[in-house]
Length: 115
Image: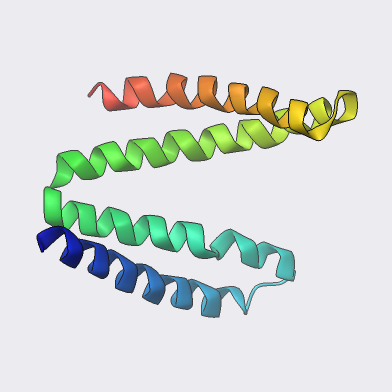
């Protein structure tokens, strides 16, 4: 029952933050920046807050380190996939860039999670 309650709290808090970020993004110009404040950051913040309250600082630190590593690796993925798409078909470029993402995410996450 405890796990169901935690899941419900994460969902409710995530939904509220998504709504708040959506309202905030309506005031941004140009509108293409509104996506920066879309669901992913709000859900990540909600999940991190619930993890901190439910499981403590150590688990929240590990979750945050994973989020940082994943976000940084996603930026590298986006930069790597563009030239790959110019040289090969989309499935091949995507899989190759996914390999880059994996290496970068691991290189960042392993030292962060070691502390």
